[in-house]
Image (cartoon, rainbow, N blue to C red):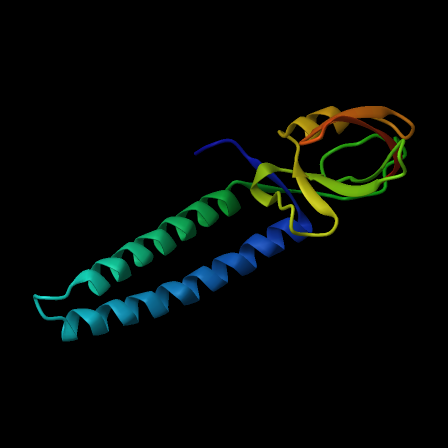
Length: 157
């Protein structure tokens, strides 16, 4: 058994939902594979091989999700008196140029730049630089256009 994975409640629920979707996809992939095996002739088995690979990919994702969820420890997102950035915290950042960004510091298993607020891993450079910081602290972020300084405007737990 590997080390525990810290997840927010919403992150845990999202992974559980994803696991359910993957299990449904596996049922479909298994049915399709069986149909292809029954109707396949020896001359054209490329569709059969693609179906086998897809089924294997889905099974691997299910195994990964199951493993992550079995090691999950849900962190409580309580409002703590100490207002420092910790796992689960939502942090609003502002640059000198007025650019604002809101991120939530999470475990790598639930990191996603597609969500709002953007969920960044506590193991990423930005995540590591934010952990333990207080409101008003300045953090340096490496961007494609070079380094940019952000000030922590607020922290929500």
